[in-house]
Amino acid sequence: MIPPRFPVTPEQIDRVVATFYAAVRRHEVLGPVFARHVADWPAHEARIAAFWRNAIMYERGYDGNPMRVHMQAGDVRPEHFDDWLMLFDATLIRVLPRETARAWSALAHRIGAGLRMGVRDLREPGGPPILD
Image 1 (cartoon, one colour):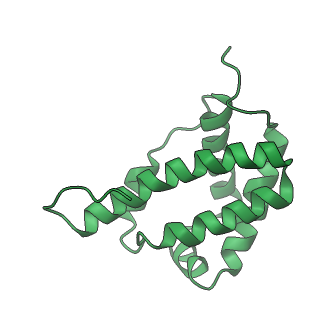
Image 2 (cartoon, one colour; image 1 turned 135 degrees about the vertical axis):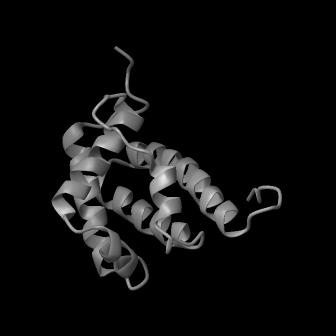
Image 3 (spheres, helix red, strand yellow; image 1 turned 180 degrees about the vertical axis):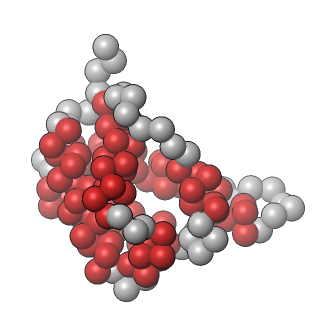
């Protein structure tokens, strides 16, 4: 069994995801974008919690392709990831012990940078990838 990337429980992951998406639904920019794509919030949150358990704890409960989903959405913009990461960091700080929040934030920022780059490249085809 592979040890988790950092100490966190499945219950903490569920709490972060629920708290984060409550903030997303209230956010003036992200709320409408998510509302166009998420019809069943409990199912979405369960899926995203499974994503994080896979990314952090190496559980095999997630089967999806976040890059494809974000690129196919059509209305996800590269600048949305700044708001997403700001809200996510605020949630991590509120919900988790400091070291766990820092470690998860670093992972989220790496994943967010990749997704941002994929969405940006989709919108600006033909040139080399733009690396931040």
